[in-house]
Image 1 (spheres, each protein chain N blue to C red):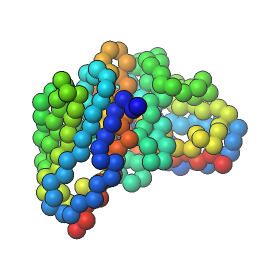
Image 2: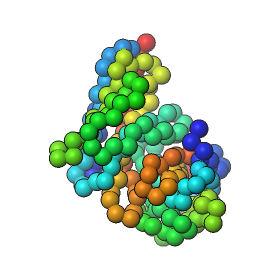
Image 3: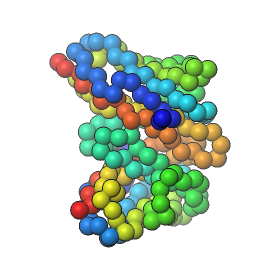
Image 4: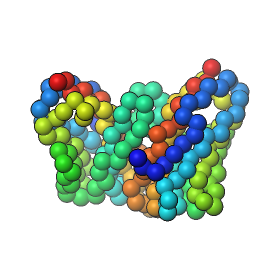
Length: 111
Length: 110
């Protein structure tokens, strides 16, 4: 148990729809990172939030957006879903540059 | 070319064997993580190291900064060690993102 939770655990959407994924950080952690893991591949960095500000972004289009709240929980929003967005979405919380603790992930299927 | 390369991609061994998984990277890093991912997606951080060697139980991780190479060793392997092992490197600076390898799928047969 890492203390990081994600919801929902599984989700099915259709092309063009929008989705919001949620992550609750471990207590005391001010940094949250989001990763996308396609089947059979390593995770790819989407973006990171530090104290409610975006602190870096990977090579993902603007339809991937995020929020971090004052309690350091976070959301990942994806608009105009595409089939290739089907993946496991992982969030990880940390205290700045220290070890990242991962949630169990949300498995998204886009039909 | 990926910035983080792992080898082998797949590894099947018998219970009790000594296991080595390798990771090479091509960028300057502040730290390297070894993580374990079980079927269904849960990821557990095993080690974070920036120099030398760390040991935890039957797991040993080493890193050579000059050669940009790290290894994860498992001694006296057991079927419960079966998982995907992923190497991820952390850039320095204010952005703490991890750049991930593709993972090594390890199967330990009884």
